[in-house]
Every structure is written in structure tokens, then in C-alpha cells.
Image (cartoon, rainbow over all chains, first blue to last red; front, top):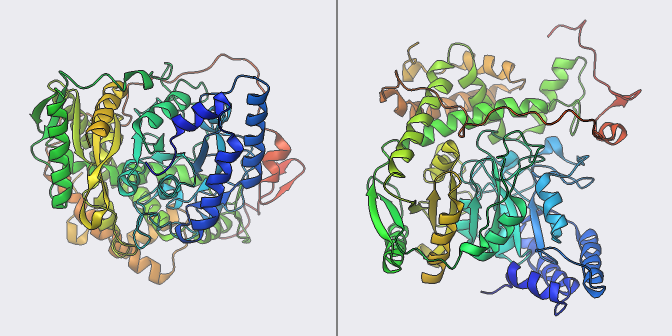
Length: 473
Length: 105
């Protein structure tokens, strides 16, 4: 491991053997060195980070208790509200907006002793799979800067991969944590819907969005999950239960576990990706798990269901950007003209495309044919997974059909970009848990991620399998 | 209702109407590109037309959650000045907007 893990930093800072300030300055110097070519951040919060690190060091010196993430430098995707600190969603329509409150995850990380280094770049309003749809320019993959980091949480992935922060948070609506994690060689977690509070996460598609961590190791991801998960009364879709205990299960192994292998896997994967997946199954088998063949007949239809449901919800959620309460206003003589002028100038092409698609799918005369049908496909998918999980505990798939692709390679045809998400989308549609774990290299010596899927609230077995894959890679 | 024929799935006029519904002003060029791209997507999305969905119940929300209300106790809300400071225009403690009536749309 090239960079120090969050677990290691927190332990050493809490014991006084390493200062939070020293840790922060190491990360800031890497930002100074490489941020120009990577562009992971929309904003680096150097001064407030230094003040936080200093306060933690003072607490340690005075023998006061510090939290489980004491001194760990963390980056936040720029669609999570931070009080008084600009939150843009990488959109011109919110440029310069300072939220009047903190997202629940931000409050929880701060209470745990995290040091926020900045707000990371994303595809505008989290719509994209490459971070090329940002109004402020693309983020590049630190492992090969001619390539994308994935998206939409590409800045959060790049920040960790480049050693700008020890961990970061992203949001995952259709794979926006797992796919960039795979493309940047990191661990990325999409928790069960309702496990992590969405309060203060700028809404894209409310029935699909979840916040989760990017880290170098499975243990780091478990530690972050324990801090950010758990009931929040300010999110009406938050599940009424405490955060799962995950750091305790990592050494349990997978003996006796049943691992699902999809026999009718959609086509289009690079051969190296499939080889790594086979090796992952073999690793688990050798560790005592049983491989079970399963089918998910509706899997490939998930893409269509997702690209109707998510834009439909987005078209409704993004109606609030009207030039009245926050962000950009383009003046016009009357209210309706002001709405349209503001939205037309403030939103980028991909956001407009999805608002249009969603508005169409919800409009009179087309609702039943598109949105209505998509919700039925969503049910078929949920039924498929229920059947599959009667014979297995988790399912293994590739995270992304390919390794990181070149900038500009998929920007001409939006549909080719959408096809990147075929393996990650189903999890969001059914509200289950999934995570990507780095597992060897593929074409061009770039990292390949293996995805562990688990049923709703199956985080424990998911992390047990992820930890075994990490030991065996 | 039946799904429209794929080749006639989307006309430029329908796209223009949707843009009005979505409060977006599209230039004639944007309208052409949008019509083309949306028609291509809808063609791809017609893959679900071959599924028999007649007896399938729609699923709008992944988990069986019920609406919940917190206890009815007074808590401090957002600071009004802080909220209005983030607005493009405010006056007398309220958001200021252009006239809503008296102009042709």
C-alpha cells in the first residue's frame, strides 16, 4: 500500500505517536504537487483543515478523548451540504452557493475527528459515469491521466487514489461510487438504501441515492461505515436501526458461505475482467465457500428501467433550481421567463438531457408506456434477486465491464456511456447493498474491480467476502 | 395504452412541448440534437416492450418503508438571514421574484 490507511492514521493520532497536523501536511503537499493535472477538487479547504488538525492534536495532548477517525483527512463529494462552504454539484446553477446547514454525514464525520480537506468534482448533479460532465472541467485518473476516473464520484475516487485524502465520501445512484472505485483501484461501498442518511445530500433520484465511502482497504471502509451509518430522524427514508458492526466481522472468513455466480452474465466485458472474476470465485472457493450458479433473467432490462426511473425522479427533484431561493438567476421580465432563462443557462447538456427524458417519461400520454413500465421491470428485478438469494448469500459480478477508458472516448453518444452501468444499476433499483473491491489488473495494467452484491442489510456478509477477496488477491 | 411506433417515437414538436413543461429554452439546434438523442434512447429502451408486464405490480420504492413523523416538538429551524443571504434577490425578509402576472408567456 503506497499510502497510509485511515485505520492506521486514526490509531497513531489517538495514541499521540503521530500528529494530525503532520498527516494533513503530507496530504496537502501531494495536493500541491499533483492537483493541477488530476483536478480532483472543486475546492480545497486548507485553512479550516489546518485548524481542525491542530484542535485534534491539542485534544490528544490534553488527554481528551478523540473520535474513531481522529486526524483522518477526508474529502467530500461536492453534492453534500457543508455549512458556509460552497456546495456546487459541479453545476453553474449552484456556483457560489453556501448551504445554511451540514449534511448528517458531515456532522457525524466531524464528530468522529475527521479532517475535511475539500469538496470533490463530480459529473454535474451526479449524472454521468466519467466526471467529464462537470461544469468546471473533467477529473483525470491519477493512475493514467489520459483516462477518466469513472463517475459520477470521480473526484472523490481520484482524491483517494492520488493520496490527497486517506478516504472520501461519494454518492451512488446507479454505480457512482462502485464504478469509479473499480477504475481507480479502490474499495467503494453502496450501502443498503436507508442505512446512511441522505439528509443534506443534494437529491438526484431519491429512491436510488445512497452515500458511501471510498478507501484503500476493506477495513477502512468498515470503519467509515460505522461512523456514517445509523438512523437519522431528519431523513424519512432512514431505517430505524443503529449502524452495522463491520470492523468486527472482517476476520471471520467465508467458510460455508454460498457465493452466487450469474450464468447469463450480460455480454460486453473485457476478457481480462472476466478472468479476474473467475479468479475471485476460485479465491473464495479455496477459502471454504461454495459457488452456486444462479440466473437473473431481468438483469439486462435494469438499464432501461434505471434510465427511465432516475431521470423521472431527477426531473422532479431539479425543478427546485428556478432562480428564486439559491444559486444563479438570469433576469427576465416575468417569472416564467426567468425560470426558463435561469435553467437554460445554469444546467449543462447531460442534465438537460435527463430532465427532458424524465419529463417526457412522466408526461400525460407517455407515463404508462415508460415510467409505469419501468416500475414494473423494477419489480421483476426484485423478484429475480429474491429467488437468487434463496440459494446464495452474496453474488459476485464485475463492477465495470472495462478498465478506465480514455477521456472523450464515450462523450459523443450518451447511450454508450450509460452501458457502463449495467452491473451496478440493479442494486440501486432494488435497494440492496453492494461494494467494489480491487482484484488484480486488466488491460493496460489498469485495476479491475470485483463487485460483491448482498441483499438488503446484508452488509456483514458482504464485508466478510470483501475482506477475503482482499486477503486473496 | 400502446407504445408508439419506434420510428415515430418522438417528433420535434413533442420535444419542444416537453422543453416547455421542463422550463427549458432550447435553441433550434439544441432541439434537433435533443430530438435525435432522445429518440435513440427510447429505441434502446423499447427492449422492455417484449416483457409481459400485465400482472406485475409496480415498485416505486425499494424497501417497505412507511411514512414517519417525528415527535411534534418545537426545534430551531434554519436561520432566516442566512437562508436569504444565499438567494439571488431578497427584500423585507422574503424572496424577491419578477412579476408573475401581466405578461404573455
